[in-house]
Length: 327
Image (cartoon, rainbow, N blue to C red; front, side, top):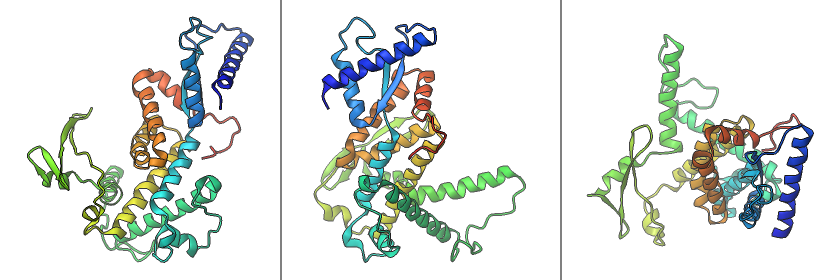
C-alpha cells in the first residue's frame, strides 16, 4: 500500500531478472523488456513507482527492464460480472418473470450473491445458465419453434449445394438476429431525427460527427447526453424488451470474454475490450476499468510494436499448472 514498499518489490524484480539472465549465460542489456502486471491497484502502484524512478540514468535503477505493466483479466471479468448484476438485479423484481432475481429464487440458487466478490464462481455459473436460457428462447422465437427440440417453422434453411452456401446463409440469418436483438443498430433512427447536422434531444443540440474507419466505411456518431428528465427518456419504451436486450448484450459479451481467456486471440480480445470499455464507463462504480482498458489498448495499438503486443497478450495467459484459466 506504500510506494516505498512497491519500489522495494520492483528492485527485487530487477534482481531476479539479472540473476536469471546470468544463470542462462546471457547479459541483461538496456533493450531487455520483461512484462509485469497484477490487479488494477497493483498495476497503478507499479506504474507510480516507475514514475518515481524515471529520472535515474541507469536503466536498472529506473526499472526500465520491467515493461509493459498490465492488469489481470480475472479482476476485469469479476468487475464486469458485478456490472451485470448492478444493471439487471433488483430485489423488487422477485415477482417479475424472467428477471435475474426471479430466476434466482425460482431455481433456489442460494449461493448466488449480488456482491460478486463474495460468490464469483456461483454468480458466474448462474449468469451463464441465465443468458443461455435467453439465447434458447430467442432462437426458438426466431425460428418458430415451441422448444429447442421442435422443428423450425420460420426462417427454414433452403437446400444447400455447398458448405460455403450454408456458411453464407448462417452468417446472414444469425448476423441479422444479432444486429436486431443483441446489438441493435440505431443509425437509421438517428438519421431520421437529424435536422441539418444536429440532433435535438430534450432541448439539447448535439453535433453529429462523420468518421471514416480503416476499411473505408463512413459511420455517424451522435453522442448521448445524460439527462435528469427520466420521464421524457422512458416515455413509451418497452421495458421488458429493453431488459431482454440488455441481458443478451451484457451476457453474450461476458461469455465471449470468458472464451477469449480460455483460448486467447489478440484481435478478438481487442475487439471485446473496446466494447467492454463502454460498458464499464456507463457504471460509475467500475469506470476505472474503462480507463485501464483504454490504457491497455493504447499500448497494444500505438506504443508497442506488433511483435511486442502479441508477446504481451500471450504472456497474460501463461499456464504453468496445466489447468483451465481460473476465469
